[in-house]
Length: 282
Image (cartoon, rainbow, N blue to C red; front, side, top):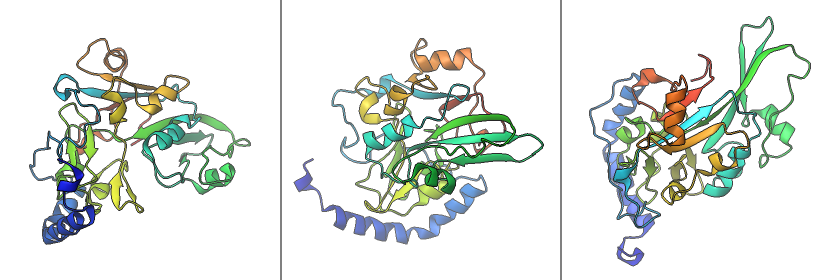
């Protein structure tokens, strides 16, 4: 379907917005999600628009099942992944909106509290000198640090994604190859998905009026490339591959390590697998 054959984006959004408001009574699903009680709605396994989400014409999503691994014992907090993601995916260059980000966990001697910060922290923003540059401030240089580590975070591309359950227009959907995507042509900006995600992996793009998140660089992986964050990581802390291939990097990562997922109690069944994290990481 050509763009000329479609109603204007503004007109379609106005219609869908009215539709969403009419269905606001079903917004109780958000409250249900918060209680861990989700309606039994099947995740979609087809794009919301006419193949509009397929960047590669001949890609067959039925032959793949993608997965992502994070080794927190390797991450050095350089934030190259964050910068590469922003450039690759046209993410607003500020300290408040990210498709992927890195958190720092610090245990100090004689302090039972775990100190957690990210590049969104005001101290780190001040240290960077600009919201368009990212680094961690050296705030613990005079402290007695017992243990510290970095944890990269991103969309978990869940097998049972809460965001898909609550989307009133089908803009958010799960593909057959295991990637959760957003069709921005159908997003009405209701932000239900932002609220429903238990991992804080979504943000709202005010300029475009749509929700956004990590897509595992779908436009790259469907062409046989790695996600931008994986490609630029200098220490191999990020791993990506096809779980259907038993010799792929992600299959070997899962098989050769004691992996865990974030917040398994939610029932979302994440497909980002971690090594080297403590119980305070969620």
